[in-house]
Length: 363
Image 1 (tube, rainbow, N blue to C red):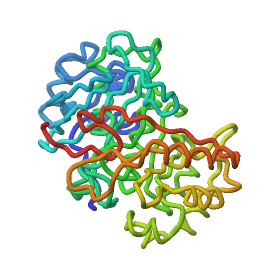
Image 2 (image 1 turned 180 degrees about the vertical axis):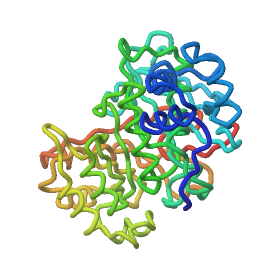
Image 3 (image 1 turned 120 degrees about the vertical axis):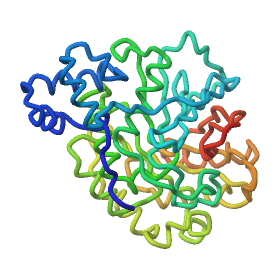
């Protein structure tokens, strides 16, 4: 897929903004003013950046360097407090971004709902591509195929749009980011990593509050381990052996389970950091106690935890959701083997906002 052409200010880093400032004969400190307006201040139009001279703002506009933030086009609210946003990009393409108050529910499992007006922490689930090319057989997004990558500005812009929607003050309120929306982040690696750096250096997110999920793009996992600034790593595993994984995740044919697990074992973890293995349980396919025992052996020796996700159903998905008793048995096998395992309760399932349900539709 071709590299994305930068067509606006949003997504430019400080060095690139310095180049713009120099080109227009402005003093260097204008780059800092631009950077702060774009990212920490989250200003949406050049005309609103009062620190910049009007002549400079007009010159930027004449050059076509507007801010061009993504815009929330439609909003869908779940009974549990989750909100799914249909977000329109400057060229009209749309993706979905999800707001989950009180975290993503990953390890709480208490069934409580969040009061949108009284949240203390939240998670934003972010898309990295328009559609997805990986074609996992249990995911609605796979049916879309992939249309294009998102730019760093479009990735950051999703987040800032949602932050503005909820009047978030990052100094007072805790927000986590999970790159687990539409698309495979590691198939859009340069733009994804640029977005991460802008979020850390500009918007103000600690890297410790970000997690990226990959279906298993092995070369990029190795690259990711060498990054100076990076989110935590989650690997969408979903199977305890090669045969099952190939049948439900065709990407395994390119990077087999042996290569994937080798990359996981070699990944340079920081102090107290664990790799997260995500495992979608499919009724009668990968959810038996024997499958759990195979999974124990597969991840043995890796500092990790396992997030178990009972399949979130959808039209034309050829799999069923396992019984709660099967999920509990699977979890027990892992825990008894000394592997931290958590059952992620579904968030926003009633509005197609849960894991694997994002499908870029209006309803």
